[in-house]
Length: 389
Ligand SMILES: *Cc1c(COP(=O)(O)O)cnc(C)c1O
Image (spheres, rainbow, N blue to C red):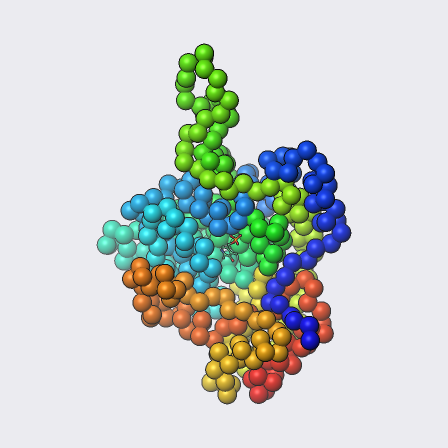
C-alpha cells in the first residue's frame, strides 16, 4: 500500500531545469540567483529587503543577533512551535520564556501576552524580543502584538516558516508592517522549497546589512564599512563581526525562484484540500481548524483536535492506527518547554495549560499539493474506522 505522508514537496520540470541551469553556470554559490530569489520574495511580500540563508533556523539566529539579543536578555515565543523558534534565543546566550496559546487559533494568545507583560513589567523581566509563530500558516493577531510592542518596548520577529503565500488584513505575510523581521522556511514540507533554506525579510536597511554580514562570517568587502588601515596594505575584505557560514547556494536559490512562480497556485490548492476536509469531517468527533476572519492562511498544515470524550481510543492509539494504515500523520507540536532539554532549564508540566490541552488531542493529517481526492478519502476512511464514527 502506498504511504501517504503528512506533507511533501511538489517539483516540476521547470524546477529541475532551473537547478540544472545553475549547475552548468559559472557560480554554484554567491552568484546572481540568490539575489534574484531574494528580490522575487521581497517583491511578492512588498518588503524592502530579503536576506537568503541556508535555513529558517539560521535566519532566526541572525535575526535575534541583528536585534541585539545577547546574554541577560529574554525572548518570548509560543510553546506550540518547532524548537527552532526558541533555540535561536539560546544560541545568543539569552533566556527563553513561553506565552500560552489561543484556544481557537492555537497561535500565541494576545490576552496571555498582555497579562504576562504586565507582570513582567512589575518584576523587571520584560522581553527584548517576542517571536510570534503563524502556526499552520494562519497569521497571528499582529496588529495587537505590535501595539503591545510599542507600549512595552520589545522587538518582533515573525516566525512565518509556515506562512509564505498567506495574508493578514489583506496584505502579504512578510511585509513586516507589524514586525521588525519576518522569517520564512523553505524546507521540503513547507509551502515552497529550496531543499534546505530560509529567508529573513525586513524594511530596515541596517538590520538587513547586519544580517548579510552575519550570514557570511562577519566579513565585509564594502570599503565604507572597513576599519581604517594604512593605504600601503592590501585589504580586499575585513572581518568586522563574528558571523557564520549561513549562505544559501545558487543551486538552492534556483529551485526557490522557480517555485515562487507557483506559490499562489500552491496556496489555492491547499485551500481546496482544506475546504474538502472541512466538509468531509463535519460529522466526525473532531474539531477542524478555525480561521480568523482577517486572515488568509497558507495552510501549511491541517490540524484536527480529537474529541477524546467521544472516541473510544487514546490520542496515542489514534496516531498509531493511522501510521499502521500507512498514513503518516504527525504532531505539531509537543510544547517546546516539555522537551527534556527545556526541562533541564527548569520548565515543568502545567506551565501553559492551553498548550498542553491542545497537545493532548491534536493530529496533523496529510496536506500537500499532490494529495489526490482518493488519498484524502483514504484518510477519511481511516479516521472513521479509528474513531468508531
Ligand atoms: C520548519 C520550521 C522552522 C525551521 O525551519 P528550517 O528551515 O528547517 O530551519 C522554524 N520554525 C518553524 C515554526 C518551523 O515550522
